[in-house]
Structures are given as structure tokens and as C-alpha cells.
Length: 272
Image 1 (cartoon, rainbow, N blue to C red):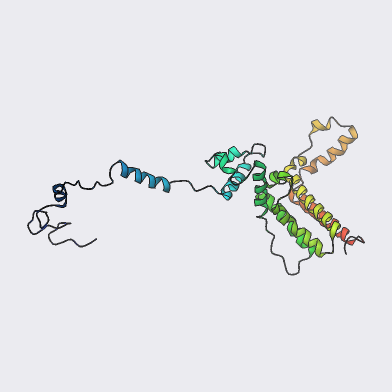
Image 2: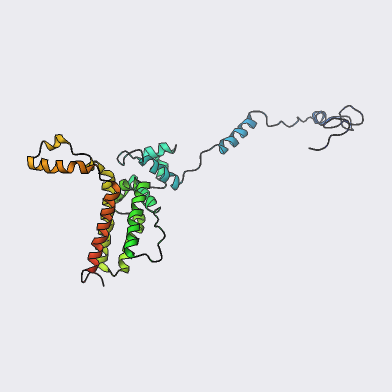
């Protein structure tokens, strides 16, 4: 703030003490004398419109983007099934219209495929140890895949959209393919064993998560529909079903997957 004059007036006064200019007229009175009206300030309707326009621009929601559509879609798939997933529902969540989404994805299936690809691209492998064996690498891969499906449970719902696997899933499986290639598998054998290993791993993880009800106590009502010898055998197993844990089931299944590969690699003609 500039310092005030000793007279105490913010704008000061002329020597005549009348507040007019040295020529004896104010700027306004001089304008009137020349037949001109003083300029209006922007305090009327026009000024308010300009202010409102500035505020409107400042308060606009962020522009729609591909990542915004993907993130919102993933959130919706955590609440709704794939059958309930629609472009209209995504548009509503983004406070826009469905047609705006087609600027990024030509169809619902294309959006689902992009979601699967986006999720798969987030997959990471633990840093390998210096003395790590190929079995250790596949063991790490199996548990990393399990963790990834836990972090993104919707991945199972959207994989295979448009009848094909995404580039992200192919990148995930690349660790397995390269590991088996380094062990001597080539061509048809490499493609076969890599595909079986990855498919069985994913199927095991998914079934264990979705099919845990199979480990619930066997219903006696259901047993009544079986033959006596069948009932006796299942009653013997009944108490053990509830003792099974997800970790021990996956541990056994993963060991079996790797054991199968070890036997295949030892079969003459399988590996070069």
C-alpha cells in the first residue's frame, strides 16, 4: 500500500481544497460539458455474466479421458456383474452421455477387453534371486498371479472379452514361456506346456476362490439320496472338508503343476 499523505486523504486534495482539478472541473463534469457520458463500470448485468462465465469455467468437471472411463468401469464391475455392466451405467457414473464413451471405445465388448488389458498390465513379478532356479521362478509367478487376482477380482470376469486374450495377459504368460524356453522346450511342445501351465494355474486360482463352498460340510439331507455305502464313505470325509484351507490347497496344486513340468522336461524328445 502506498503511504498516505499527511493530509490524511487517500486520494489527496488540490490546493484550492475543493477536490476539483486545477482547471476547476472534475473529470466527470468535464466529460458532461463536452457532451459525453462517463464510461460505465462492469457492475451491471454484463459484468455479472462475465463473472459467472469465469466461475463456470473454473467449476467444470475434468475433461473425460480414457483412463477415467477405465477406472470408473473397474469400480462398477466390483459392484455389478458383467451382465449388468452397460455403457449407460458407466456414462451415468461419469456424469456424461453414453455417446461420449464411444470416442474412446467402439463397443461394450471393446471396453471390457480394454479393462482386462489394463488390469493385466499392472501385474508385476518379484525381483528374482541370484541363485534362483526355474522352479523358483514359476513358483513366484504362481503366487504373484494369485495376488493379482485378489487385488483385481474382476479380471476373471472380463478376460476373454471379444473372444481373445488381451496383450496384457500375453505379457503375464511371457514369464512362463521364456522360462520353459530356457529349459529347452521349443515349438509345439513349448506352446503346449506353457498354455497348459498358465491355464491350469488360472483355473485353480479361480475355482478355489469361487468354489470354496465345495469345502463346506456335506449336507446330511443330500447324503440321504445316496446309497448306504456311499453315505458311509462321505460321512467319514465330512469332518475333514471344513479343515481344508485355501493356502494348503493352492500350495499342493502349484507344486503339482511344477512337478508335471519337471516330468515333461525329463521325457525324451520333449526338450532339445
